[in-house]
Image: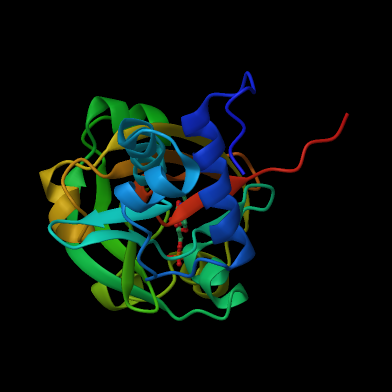
Length: 240
Ligand code: 16G
């Protein structure tokens, strides 16, 4: 029930209520939410308050609006632990999903000063610049742009990039990936991301930058990824 005497804002109580129904499975992906009017009548609250709660759920990716139809429950988000250094392919397989890639571009380019700086190479040294849409069960999840020093990762081909880069580095090249630093920040989808990730304009995006190192500390990749925030959330276990 909604408690109007509570110091907790009413829109927030409704938002939490709907979120719980989604988490418990009372509302399933694809289900249509009751209309604003129905919520307002059921709980004796204003439609404005209902709209505020639903807008929040839309922004957080729990539900989405379809013009002229209604509001629907989104697919469940993939919860990605941040402790282990894993590849996209490993993550998807561990979940029983089929990983897929759509190669957007594959080039060898001279390193810009910032890429050279991250990879600890000289400006203009050749680097692979590879952009891939990463798919889970054929659904686009992220747009990834990777920079790899050509000298350190020789022989990369389009075919290799259609499967796992980490598998190629470790199994074929025999190099051991040791650690990575990752920075995550929020953003909204730009036009390119809207098209390649098949999301609505201004959808929430998690921008991730990963710097990955080999056992001897040599940087092996610099990757910028745009993850769909409506399908992904990141989880970390903390100890004290
Ligand atoms: C993940 C990594 C990316 C790495 C890729 C290798 C993040 C944010 N990024 O997507 O840095 O290049 O895995 O995946 O997790 P692959 O071995 O399947 O090609």
